[in-house]
Image 1 (cartoon, rainbow, N blue to C red):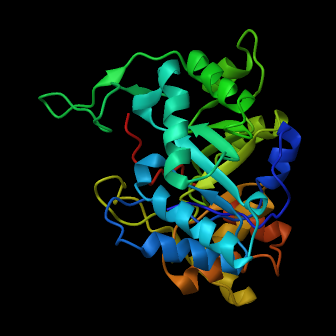
Image 2 (spheres, one colour; image 1 turned 45 degrees about the vertical axis):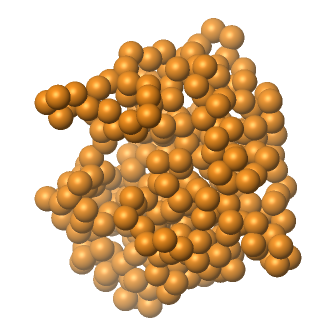
Length: 315
């Protein structure tokens, strides 16, 4: 499912304007087993609650529901298209430059939208191009594809120039990979954002500081930890929301551990994109702007860092 932020400015063309819209909180869902219609309802509930930045992807297999939800809310007069900030993603099998624009156009056709506000490279490595989204050999090993990230980036730049994407960014990139793009000869547009796993158990201080220095917004996925889906989650990692420090601080503010974890990242300048299909939690996750954590509380939460990754990247 997608993710959403509560800004309501019009579509942006400059990097600074886009960065200013990539703020606050989003709604996200990733599942191949999502019940039909649940994403549609979740997005509509989120929009009604005030979310505006929706984060989606072709491989979530629900962009048709996201597009329908947006169109229905526009028809109701609840929002205008320019109120919504939609982020789409380029999947691993589509890194060859000649595949980038057709892939984005396919996303736009499914969404029934004219443009995305942000289009990002989902992972800094590629799979073998083809119909199989997760190509594997006879031994069950992923089939990777040699790729030139700079050439892929140039294809994203062309999509921005064509008006198909208002801005472009990356996901799961480390400092070296970001520098490779930014130091590319003939660079037209630098990444406006880098979407990475980020939460109190994995605070990413060095990457966050590097991105701050270069005006790259960190978008934090799995800000509440994750579900315990063994197919893509490290289930040996400790459950974040049971942490006693988060729960103790939450008790002080009459907030949940989840709200404290989200507020922590927001105060650090990280855009948070929690996943939920539960109407109460969708609204709850947005109720983090009526209080602030103290400097001491921020330090206590920062000290929880264990460099724990919940999401098992496909590498």
